[in-house]
Image (cartoon, rainbow, N blue to C red; front, side):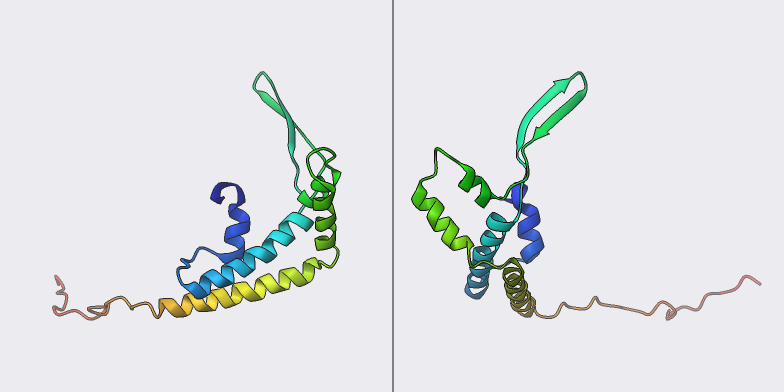
Length: 140
């Protein structure tokens, strides 16, 4: 998941360590919303062919479509019941509202995580830069 979807995962929740039950509950709510946003509203291009001519590689891509649109366009492997269920799921969705909910949950998750970490210890400063025990001597 990290290699293919790193941009979705890390841009949504960041690089913090999440290891409490409250954080897990928030993450599960975020992923449920992110799934709807990605599968219903984010178009993707699929690679159809890759041809190598000498050192040049030519790639041919399918037209961009969301995973939801690809499932509806499928004729053989997806049943009508599944397509009907997906259409019902898609009808009330509002991408702007979903994005606002994700941002609010991510902010709450960040607050939980940073509160758990506490304050960072300040580095020990033994002497100020201009404060020394021996005064420099001049050779004059």
